[in-house]
Structure formats: C-alpha cells, structure tokens
Length: 193
Image (cartoon, rainbow, N blue to C red; front, side):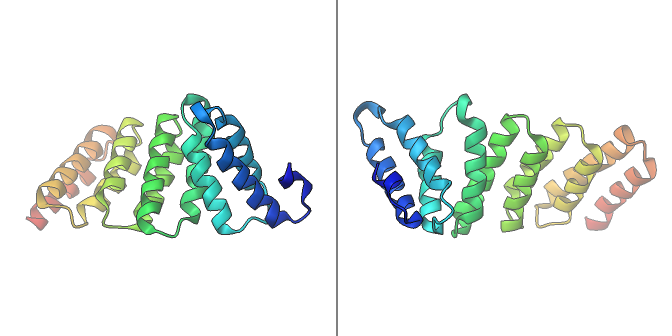
C-alpha cells in the first residue's frame, strides 16, 4: 500500500522490493504468488536502479519454478545475465538460459545464448560442445561444420581435434555432398599430426 501511495518512483521501487521480501517470509510459502507480483511491479519501475533491478530479477527467478513459469524464467535469466557484473555468474546464467531455451524447443535462442557464453570466455569448451549437440540434433549441417572447424582450430586436445575433423569429413561427404571438402578435412588431420 505504501508503495502505491508514494509519488517518488525510486522509493516506490524500493518499497515494492521490501514488500515482496516480506511476502516471501510468510509461513508455508503462502506469499509466493504475492511476492512474484511485487517483484514484477518493481521490475516495471522505470526509475529503479541497477541494483534494485538485479535484486528483483534474482528473487523472481528463484521463485519461478515449473513448466507454467518456464518462458518467464527464461526472460528473467537473460535480463539478469545482461546486468550481472561477475563474469562467472554471467556465464552460468547464459548457460542456464540456453539449456532452458533448448528444453522449450527454442533452438535459435539456445544457440544465441550459448554464443553469448562463448563470447564471455572463448576457452570455455562447454558452449561449443552444447552448440555442437544442438546443431547435430537439429541437422543443421553447414552450421555444424563451422562450429566443428572452430573447435578443431582451438586449444582442444589432439584426439578431439582429430575427431572433429573426421566428423567434418563425414558430414561434407554424406550430408552435404561435397567430397572435395571432405578430402580437405582429412588432409588437415595429416597437416596437424
């Protein structure tokens, strides 16, 4: 009530956050829905500062569970990742959002999110591995070849680079009908041995 009564937008946001946190402390989780509604109001406050927005995103994200809230949780994770200052936390959020997008069948979104995590740390092998899995499952052969080539040119162990080049050769030959490119991929194995 106090939040709705005040005319100062920044104070209003702070009051919504405090009211939401109070609702969260109600016994037996009885205030969960009310807390989520208040966090949403705080997020809609244009005068909220970065810390208020991050707090609301973190708290709301923690409350959003289950299939019914999956799409909203995905949006919250993306917004939170964009605002987080810790690279480690940001990478974790990009990965969590990517996995959630994939589970929702949002392949392009999942790929973009793994790309953001990879942008954070080019040496992180997990985004490349997950991107390869997604592209393989979606049968996006040209894109898969490009990602496999990227990984094969990186700091991966020799056995991984060799396996990637072999897979590129198979895809070029069997899926893309490009025997010359398949041979070129096999030649790279010899060049890098």
